[in-house]
Length: 178
Image (cartoon, rainbow, N blue to C red):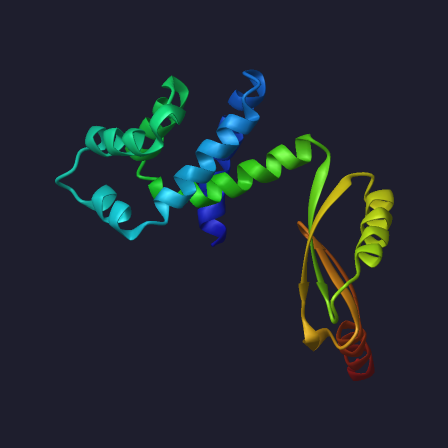
């Protein structure tokens, strides 16, 4: 997985710079999301991998699937991706692009795991605290994980804040073993 991200990162950064310069972040976001969906279709993957289909033919197919989204910049991007045989990286490119876009907008995506369902007030208080601590707006998605026993576990990029009972028990067990 790390290798796929490593290969996808230069594409995502290049598209982000292009989209930022031309003020087309939302259009590129939609286009990359659509390309990511297309790249997850097994029939399309088979066509792309078929040696009988040229890169130009595959590009025409993809442009047809994108419809009006396929402007000259998108066609150039697709040509580069197909020429370098990086079609399978498109979902990762889309994800990385969204991360770059969110960082540029000062928004951090947080995944919050809670032992129990959170009320709107609890979620608002937690996101307000995270916003204050990180000095960035927080966009949160919440899931319930009963294995936490109690508390929450927050993941924002590489940052993990484990304020769960199971996390505290694991830390206690580790400290007792040392």
